[in-house]
Image (tube, rainbow, N blue to C red; front, side, top):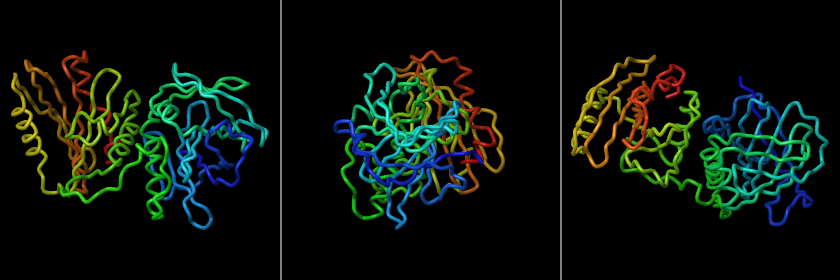
Length: 363
């Protein structure tokens, strides 16, 4: 299996590494994860792997998430039950002096540098406490390139997928605290990232609730080998009919929604209804069609497109419907607005990566 690292126990505090009002971080041990993560506490967001961690008495301690880079360095984020948070860097090739500390700076894109202190807590790894502030959180979530400036050189990390990963991490902490029935502290800058407890839904066909759709879509994109995308903030979702929306670097818009209890739904009839609905909402010249599609394993697939031109808001949408053996229907849409210069073949084939058997098999 793929080798990952998990971040363990907050065992002691180090006042000497507290820069100003920076949240105080404690000792963190890192060790190879040699067994599958517990399904009860493990989660994934794109190429980030996360877990909730507990004290020996079973009480919740922190949530951690890591991603491994081609350089061999594993970058991790950790949020404690008190909403202290920080980064961890691990490399099997390092032989560091445990207990030493170094003033460093973090640079994200062209934003102002963030002063920090790196503490060596293992010969293979360091922990970097981070300030629980909107400025630092926004930089980590929405930046593209993180450069860690140290006395011995610079380390660079692309922050692809960090936005949804940190959101999933904050949600993990909130959910664990909720299970303890104590509500936990306010959360500082993380407060807006925490998913509210799900309320009973009148529509029992909704497959995803809260942040589940973001995690599901991130996993599919990662399985499909797609990296040139930006997940939109759920609070700013411009497409209310979809659970999650993302954009590609070429200007295309991607969207996904899911339905359960669809065992009796015929995919061809569903495709006809979608075409009819889009036709009704078009006041310009409407066109549509169905595309070649066959089953992938035990998952049935339908592909179609609709286009509305000569309208105030011209749009073309290519839909892909997946019906799983469990009776779920996953709908993926790729959308081109006419002000986006995207070649027609890029739009028509945008779902190709999602049709690969390994991707379909995860639905």
